Length: 237
Ligand SMILES: Nc1ncnc2c1ncn2[C@@H]1O[C@H](COP(=O)(O)OP(=O)(O)OP(=O)(O)O)[C@@H](O)[C@H]1O
Image (tube, rainbow, N blue to C red):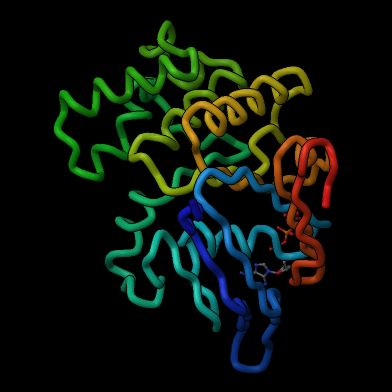
């Protein structure tokens, strides 16, 4: 059976304008389809446009031209007022610097996206507990972020990213602030979520070794996708 399309980009161009004179076209026409359950990485040198592309995938920014369809909805049809709600529902973000809310317990951090989504108290607390259990953080639920190690913070952040059952988990250099060993543990967690829960994951990374662990590598250079490789068995094609 054909897998469901999670998002589709058609000829996405992004231009930044500074004043009326200066314009900088950063993405020059990106076309890309990602299906449900894929674990994709986006790699490319610094300045190639990865963050710009990620901001569009994550509905944090809009394209200048082209079409972006996320979970069946064209982003052109989502007005600015609805954008943050849409983002909260559809995207689970994991950042390099964790971005947990300080002086707020791990449990409350995971509850937060559900609070914004209007999930009733009892239900969201139970879901947050279940998610923290899934990432093996159930014994640290009452801890504040500053009482957690980097790897533990990232596990809480990953639990939070799944709170509203997003269409995509979008992870931007999620192991960038962690030592190699802890980074591997975090990557293993993504692999587990992908394999056991069928999550669709988009990983943005500088690290080719991490990218090679995923099943599809998109390489972006100077604002264009220059290769799109998939792993078949042990071979990249
Ligand atoms: N808001 C902005 N206004 C103007 N130019 C921008 C803006 N954001 C990014 N750029 C430019 O777009 C280009 C691509 O930047 P981007 O951050 O997407 O690259 P990147 O591949 O994520 O780099 P890195 O790996 O270093 O984070 C750069 O030349 C950058 O200066």
